[in-house]
Image 1 (tube, rainbow, N blue to C red):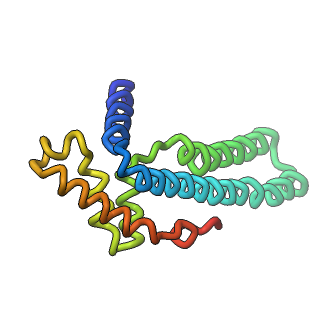
Image 2: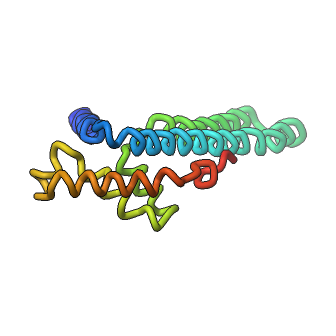
Image 3: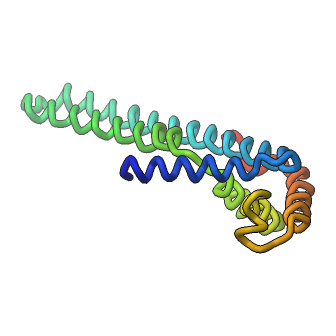
Length: 168
């Protein structure tokens, strides 16, 4: 992505979060942010495990090859460089990228809605219908927005994030 696209993406995220800053949606935003934190922690733990697996599994084989096969010097160097590149790509793709990737509230709402089908429509609608823009953009009333938000908060208050995203 170009720097201009990154800036546009950050502006869109800030705009989306500012739409959801109304007092009646504090619980909903807190739930979605907790879901994002837990999701990122799970991704970090999973990525760390996979990276450790990639780092430590080939190491004994490489050491045995180096010790008993009497490989030429350039082939040894080539094997260790390949090992280092595999380790760096594993760390980069499974640890660093999930940490640097920003998740929006709408992405969290869709993900949570996929796991709880009874919540999907109300949660996504509550995130998409922000108070300042919903009446102008979608032509709906403020009472409708409040009703959708209240319904989503009622449904979401019964959720257990530990059940949806276990720490494993």
